[in-house]
Structure formats: structure tokens, C-alpha cells
Amino acid sequence: MFSFRITNQCSGTAARAGWLSTPHGLVQTPAFMPVGTRGAIKGVTARQLRQSGTEIMLVNTYHLALRPGERLVEKLGGLHKFIGWDGPILTDSGGFQVFSLDELRQVDDGGATFRSNIDGARLRLTPQRAVQIQNALGADIIMVLDVCPPSHASTRQMVDAVRRTLLWAEQCRLAHQRQDQWLFAIVQGGLDDHQRWSCLQQLARMDFPGYAIGGLSVGECPTQMYRILRWLGPALPAGKPRYLMGVGRPIDIVEAVACGIDMFDCVIPTRNGRNGYAFTSAGVVRLRNNKWAESDGPLDAGCRCYACTRFSKAYLRHLIVAGEMLGPILVSLHNLRYYQDLMAKIRQAIRAGRFAEWLTQFRVGPAATGNGCLA
Image (cartoon, rainbow, N blue to C red; front, side, top):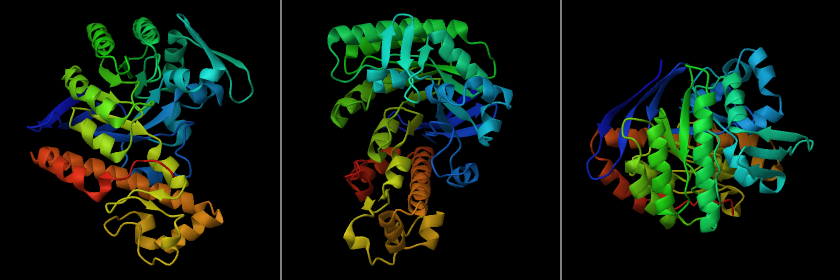
């Protein structure tokens, strides 16, 4: 039912390519997972998502628990049937909301108590409850509840976050009931090498099927993130999937692959697409810029997505500026295709044994200059 197999490793880096087998299909790795927080990629149908080359997507436990509720999803046949996606799904545990919704929650050793951002109602998310919700939703891969400290956290805060992450990981492992779901652990510790290593060593002894790196891309600079990844990525258990959570600039994905990472997720391609920011092989295109007002060329001449094969930059800019919903949809579709094409190129380079050379070329190319910001 589940398996993970490394088929190629590239000398000169820790990059590797392989296959992840799940109850809902195969996933080629390295893989990028678009984020459908509330069970949908905004403006994109399941068919369009599949056409982009996407093989696995992510949805969020916290938001689905608030609305419509995991029991309704379970009653209606589970997450795959409910959202109309027949491929693999990964659910985040809600741990990131412990970080991002700090004004709406309180944390103790037993879990996190939230004030709903919808109606103010109280939601208590314990490790056991986080797993129960994910068991009911029925995703292929589920995550432990963790504490994601900000990059500026004090040593005391970081130590406490790692302690709770380890405590909750063991409780999640014991609470997990379904054999048709893989439960992944999350390594925390911020930029503290000692805390990261201690967290990894203790989680490795619990023998989870896969391991994620959390707590990066939360305020630190890329140089700091890469330093952690260069030693931590290869140190994760070699025969199990390695997942870098919430990191999604193209250059960051490429650098992380060189550190042995297999899986990624981020809102960047669709969030930026909704704001008229397109990723292309020639660099980023900000469609609100006046210089595209009369451009009759496609976003990316080498891209075969629906937006690039049918429409000009001038038309896409018109839609974005005019506030027509079609504009954000088309640019989102393009960005999703760009990301999946990027992952395909990465896998191809690894399988051909030339990823180190490809990485050098990518670092100096125009596609590496986009920083993912909307400005």
C-alpha cells in the first residue's frame, strides 16, 4: 500500500529522485504539493490541477475542522470524494496555525486552544485530536501536531518548542489508528543546530514513516535556511521521505533538493498568481507593470499551459487590472504548470546524473532571480 523507493542519487550533491507509493497513486519525487487550505486550490478545478502535472496536493486540518468539520467530510465519503481529487493528499496538522495565529491561541503541554477566526468559537487542538481529525478526513499522509517557533525566538522559547514537539509527536504516534495513512514527524529547532539535532535524534528513535523539516521560511534569511538544510537534510533518515514544509520560492526548492529533500509545499504559485505575478523561464513577470500593456506575446514561450497557448500578456494584464476573476485563475494555472515543469526538470537532471551541473546553471539563470514577493 505504502512504499518509498530512491531510484537515483546524484554525485556532488545530496539530490535524489524516487517514487512514493500511496493508496491513491504514485508520486514522483522530488515533488511539489500545491496548497488547497480549505479543500480547494483557489480558482482551480481538480481536472486543471491534474493537467498542470500535479500528483499530490495539501489541505489543512485546522481550517477543515472549523468548516465544514471532519465528521461531515467522513460521512460524505472522505476527503478525496468530498473535494473531487482522486490523487494522493497530505494534511497539515494545524501546527503552523499555532505559529501563524498567535493572537488567536494559547499553548500548553496538552495542546493549543484557538479562538476561531470564523466565529470566535473555541477549538481545542490536542495531539490526539489533531490525529483523530486527520484519521476522519482520510488523507494519505498526515502530520503530527508540532510547535513552530518564530525565527527570532529566544533560546528558552526554542527549547520549550522542541520539548513540546517531541511530547506531541509521541502522543500522535500512539493515537494514530489507520493503517492506510502514513504519519510523518516534524523536526523543529529553528536556527539552533543543537536543538535541531536533538529533535531529529529523538524523533528518529520513534521510527516514523517520514520526516519533515518545519520552522524554516518563517523570517530567517535564505542564507540561514540553506545553512540548516545543508547538514540537516542529509541527516534525516535516508530510506524515508524528507519533506520541507512551507518553502516554495523556485530557488529555495532547487537548493533544498541539493540537500536531499523530496517533498515541498507552498502557497506562492497560486497566491502570487492571484496577484498577477507570474513565474517564467525568463524571470518573473509582474503583469500590473505598464510595460506589458501592449505585449502580444505569451507569458512564457516555452510553456504549454492553457494561459500561455491561448492568451497574450496584454490580455492577462487587462484581466488583472480590470479585476476580472479569469485573470488570477489563468495566471495561477500557469504558475502551477511552471512549478510542476520545474520539478520535472529537476528529476530529469538527477536521473541523468547531471543535477550538480544543472544546479550551477539555474543559480545564474533568470528563473532564479524571482524572490516570490508580490511587490
